[in-house]
Image 1 (cartoon, rainbow, N blue to C red):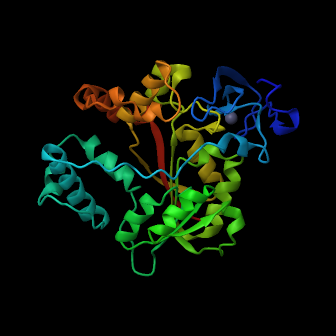
Image 2: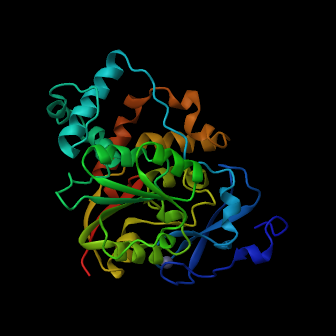
Length: 345
Ligand SMILES: [Zn+2]
């Protein structure tokens, strides 16, 4: 860690795992903020007790805002005009999503839902992931909270399925964009919102838990906000993923905004200790997206280019199919840990 750039008062030294408290650890790598360019070099360790990766020392809760000064979550997803096969694929996807999750997407391709089951399953798994595996809401059981809602894209889709949606985010522009889509979006920390006990039927945390200092505190707050048997859905980068093993220090998820990187066992234990029962572990392979972005890091790209470089965005789908198959056969090496849990106490 470069002490000249971050004052000692802006850092907290852990010396032990923030999840299981073990002091046994291996140094994994050093990373800079290749994503938004904040100065500083950070050390990742792997806990020998529970296997999570964590940064030590790390910014304090008061200083971590410096890492987010140029971090945007509000950019809308670019919409390309689709023709030919692209339009057919979109119709196929929409028919499947509308049927399975109750969305009202257009255009649709009649029979697409059945055709989907004749194709390799990871194609529909990707879309199940995008829908966060949430069942269609039951009447009177439809209050959904998305923590870290960004521009509200997911909530707008969930709203079309009948969910009554609430979002929370730190990014003012993201909150404004979500509001412009008719979403009830709140600015700031979840704990600061004053939501009542048990007021939500489902909560989603998509790539949020790796950013927080105290995951247990976040899970406790989610438990407080959920009604009994309410659903909690979590996705986070997988420390045991094949893409990490392949790319090492160039793995997409090694960026100082990610304070803790879980594996599925460690996350499941954390959930159980907070009164949740893990119902399902879903596929979060994310093979192509993670592979492309990690390749971009390896060749030295930085910032948004890691996700948007035109060469890496070219259609290489077929080349990834053997990898998709491998990861489908061995779920513990998938790109993201994706867990769905219910509140049992
Ligand atoms: Zn640990």
